[in-house]
Image (cartoon, rainbow, N blue to C red; front, top):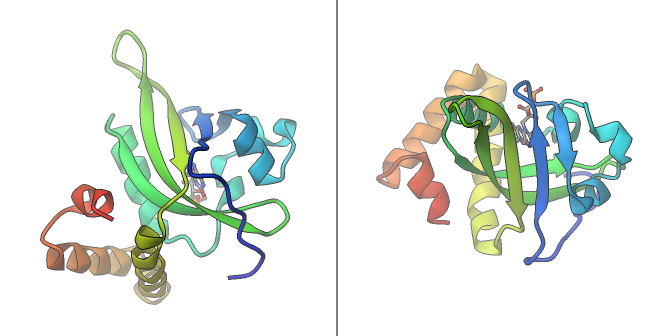
Length: 162
Ligand SMILES: Cc1cc2nc3c(=O)[nH]c(=O)nc-3n(C[C@H](O)[C@H](O)[C@H](O)COP(=O)(O)O)c2cc1C
């Protein structure tokens, strides 16, 4: 992985909100600081401005499918800063619902991942990415399903067990 890893405290939260299309509508001070961008560059930008090439597309597919259904998702994500450095997070992404039950946007709260979780996620994502490069997202999905099957569960209990 190129660049340097940027760390943050385990009692800090990196928060952002998006509109329905994934454009950033809000970021807390730490989100802005760690990203390396100015707030004006972030607001209105698509959230993939932070996308790191080591992230398997499957994780974002799963993220969007889940939140569009109105459900929450937990996911490990590595993000790229403006300077080309990176930081790992454990994200909890939720839909924001209005009083009529309509989804009006999305919200992500990120914490520092534990070293134990990273020891599982880094090799897993490397395999998912390898599968994706060879056989597309379908191959990556097949790989993830085989891992989940071995662990005897589905995505959420597996992720929450790390
Ligand atoms: C609330 C919310 C937060 C998100 N946070 C991130 C993030 O921190 N990093 C990231 O790469 N993608 C994030 N995404 C996903 C992006 O919208 C996008 O799907 C992803 O970067 C993949 O981009 P691509 O489909 O253009 O490859 C977030 C999406 C939502 C709804």
